[in-house]
Amino acid sequence: MTKHPQLTEEDLKKMVFQKNPQITYKRKAGIVTIVYEQNHPIQKFFRKLHVRIPEESYLEMDEYGSYVFTKVKGRRNAYEIGKELAEKFPDTDKYRYTRLILFLQQIEYRDHLIERVS
Image (cartoon, rainbow, N blue to C red; front, side, top):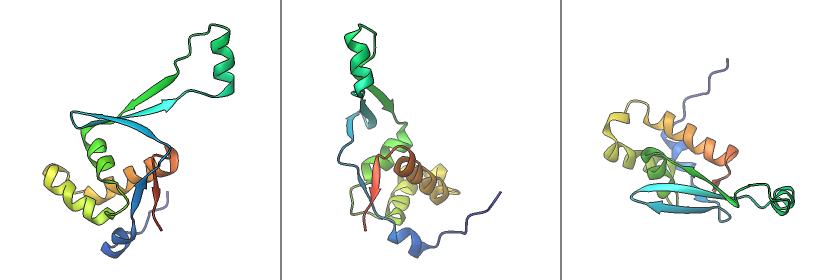
């Protein structure tokens, strides 16, 4: 297993993200729910055959993920978001930036919910 080098404060200040404009989401009581449209041609075909395929699926984030997602606006860097996380969730202070970077990478590369601002 390879170990990732420790990110410095300068590295975190260079990491700025914005929400993917193609993503639809809802926010209710501080919780973000991502809405995925199920409009692939194969799904549409099976709907015509009366197969029950929903037109939308949902991914509900927890309080931590919702908070981070709402802070991603294309202006704040990862360092600033981490500082705000420490105020909101003081018990996560020990591994704050490690968890934050893992979460941001997950929703950037796998889920495509955010994208890096150059």
